Image (cartoon, rainbow, N blue to C red; front, side):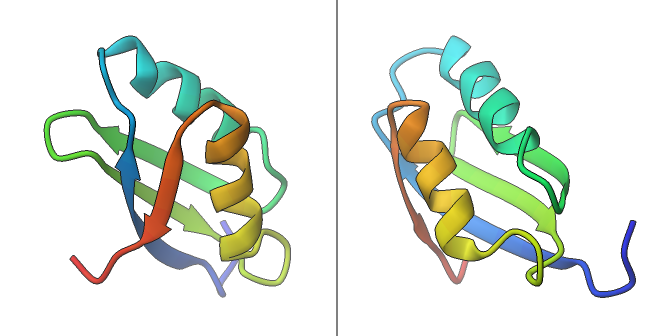
Length: 76
């Protein structure tokens, strides 16, 4: 993992079933610069460890969108 890895927390919308978790983790996990993805179904949160020089917040939000969900950066 890169020394400049950031932890990003997103709030997601549109979760309807636990299989949503796998779709998002798979899509976001394929991005270059992403080292870890954890989706919390019950709280609709997505935790992502990434190198912001390679994978921007916008890239990650776009990957969630490609999986069919809406995500926004969250402070909690």
